[in-house]
Picture 1 (tube, rainbow, N blue to C red):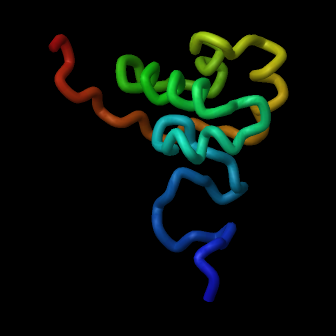
Picture 2: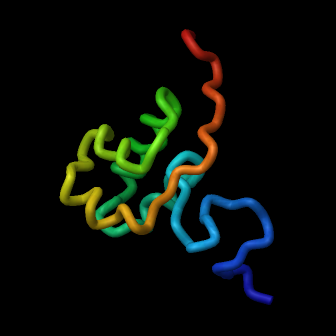
Length: 90
């Protein structure tokens, strides 16, 4: 009965293949990706608050994430349902 499980019963930020959902993962979860530290994880969170990711390739729009870094993590991320933007236009 450990709290660490690859098969979470709840709807978390990981899909069935263990990939991280970049639209719902916390900054701490994102920071576990190789090459993504706390500052890039925070940049991902801030980016998606303005513009939720439509596809994983959109990660390249985040400052500090280029083609090389994206290529190294693309198999570890996924895009679930984009959360509806809160306070659009505010």
